[in-house]
Length: 167
Image 1: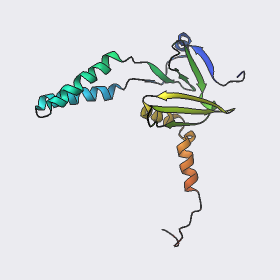
Image 2: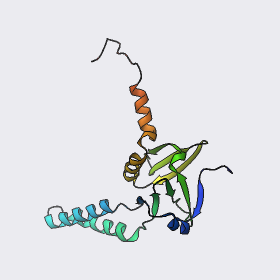
Image 3: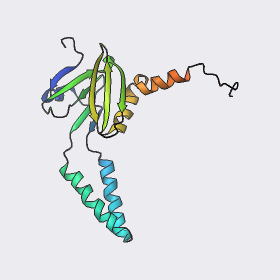
Image 4: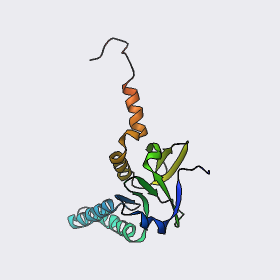
């Protein structure tokens, strides 16, 4: 992989690249805080207090015990991908090198972000907060989403109903 479009970097070197436009981490704080508030409301309602007492400790455990780590940082012209398990290295990918992107929803595992790069290179990574990732990619490069391309191709077909024109 000598001609790789992916630049491996040390995490300490990312600080020299400037301020990221958007940083996506693994912990969804909004969902956790929402569960905390709902559990407190359930406890106060007294009719569903048992459910509140079940949700509250789980939410607190997730909030304090599960580590929060960076997964993707978006800059003006490139993104940084932090692979899981490699805490000292990250991957720098220029937006110009991305042909298409897609977030595949996992059935038994988490969602996976797949980036198809020029030169038939692929980058795959777990996407814990897929909605945030899709939202940011749609801001930057909506025309490169694989699902959107497929839907546009399907709309452009000259399909005719067997029983005549459907208007």
